[in-house]
Image 1 (cartoon, rainbow, N blue to C red):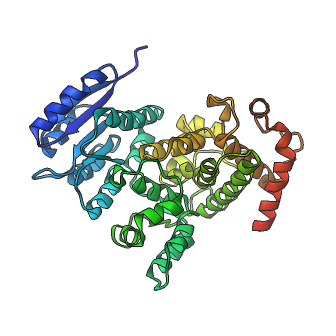
Image 2 (spheres, rainbow, N blue to C red; image 1 turned 135 degrees about the vertical axis):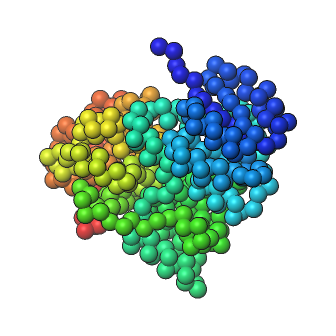
Image 3 (spheres, one colour; image 1 turned 90 degrees about the vertical axis):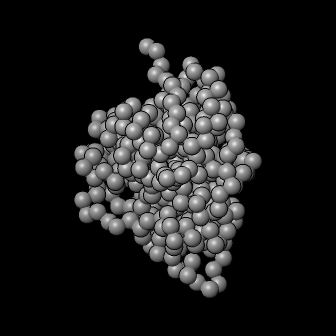
Length: 402
């Protein structure tokens, strides 16, 4: 079966620029079907007529600017991926745009860079076949934060003796805050040569004034309001994620991962169940998913109900927000590591083992034979003889957190 091309809409009021884009995208004709609009209103008309996958719009346009256009797109056609091209723009506009755009692209940019960013998101988009989930996840601007962490952050930001370190340590504990802050710092506005995967470094780069504007002004973080019908609590998701983060770091260190990989292990642990925060947004679907005998969400039931799982859902969101690929891949495959093509133990191995061992320990499962683990995968990775030691580390972390 022939692969469907990605349908991309470019928007700019400068006809010369649109003409240049038209010439530049010709080499991607095998992968993209491209259309053009010279105003926000024309773009909205075309989006209403054709099933575009993504829109790439200029920031500065008369009558309807890029931010206003993407706001309308997010409401009218929420499944469309949203990218904004930004040149010389003040910080406030960039922060506003990250609330509506999935990613910010620098202007000018060569078409190869634009293609790589947009097509990566489109490929992730094609992995979600459920139209309801696609609409919900692509349309999401914020995720719920753990209430006590959210309130602690507000208190810290209002404190006279606050510091970047204190603020960063709070953000680093919360999946929603971490994902959003990494989305912003990895936007093209900052022109960084490498992706940033550390919340602490992100806060340092952004600065306290920007963080305060994001949290207190634009309200880029939101507090979880609670849902008595939810089958699991946000606190339970948070506590488990912190344990996985700590254990993944310990296992990664034992595996002699490098400094960047260890940082990614910490962050992946915090973010690995971010898909469950998405499930809080769709309680009618969440309540249909069954739990296994250990009291954990059944992955098999997730696939039966949604034709996907929280792992792929979380990875899709992180991917379209532009987070580093190693973290996105680790989140995507953290329940089925054998599906990722790799012959070397690394970040995914550390995350997978941490999550599984902690789930077994929490459920009181006898893990002496490790039958719940993918032993073929662990044998291929050359780490199967380390499981007993890692199991003890998981048990110690649980006991120390009680």
